[in-house]
Image (cartoon, rainbow, N blue to C red):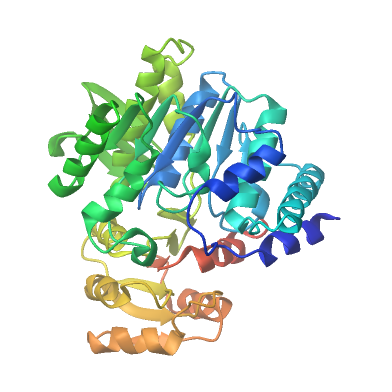
Length: 428
């Protein structure tokens, strides 16, 4: 097996299994020697913001001198970005060797009449093997989908569990109400553990408090008063106040202050448990060092090109807030592409008033909404919209019509944002 064959194998596996539950994942790991055991975890769930929160926490731990495994799902371009140690992607040869090892275990399960582990489960197993081999001090583990039944949830009680913002997404798997979705996310709370959640809708907080009480968890609620958010805010970053201290982050977008405060709350719990290399300096350095691809990311300055992976109503709401704050009274040239199973009509209704023109594309995914259908949606809100046959064509048209001081913003799906980054930045 070579690198291309390893990727082809991973992509050929079913993403989701017919049987929900963790038994299949546990059996796969048992056949691999239970590599998930003996590692220290920070486990992160949430509808929006969990990836950025993972990035903040892992950068703080690295700044403190801890060898840190990072697991994210999905990456915008290269598969190897999903599995990292100290910010370095897994080596291709190592990925090939571990993929073969996991494939052999999965094949043996099939030969024994058991169901084949899913893509998420097998990739997760590869990551656990890698972190074990690398002897990581910490692994910051991003939940793939939900929490309760996610393949990452086979771990024992983490040092701290973190739950970011909860909103509507993946309802076919997680439920149709916020309390149902919150219940799935709360599935990562383990008996007697520490859990940090961001203060949010009362019906969500009620679920968190009830589950924490049932499981004897210590629930820590993170939040920032309105007057402490974004003390200074421009294209170089943001300053905010958290527990009387001023912090600086390089990431843009109002919501990143929420994610940074969640990360600070989580690492302070680690600090209280005796991980004393986590100093105030490490926290500050880690926050400033954090970069996160595709989340209100400025790729070019003239004209300004911003990409944001917002793909559900809550994500779009905060994207609009950030755009209005940074570019008041400016009409924006948008590039948009969405999946058909998202609540795209309410999303586009929010964005429509901000747009000068909308260039629509079809994301590279079988669930994608055709570009012309999305253009029709914008037209129904009175917006000018043009559909395109490719991401490259849409970007080219947007750049040609933009003046030097204009803003272009691509949003709607992480499935094509990576292509925009490559076209603007070259190889990344």
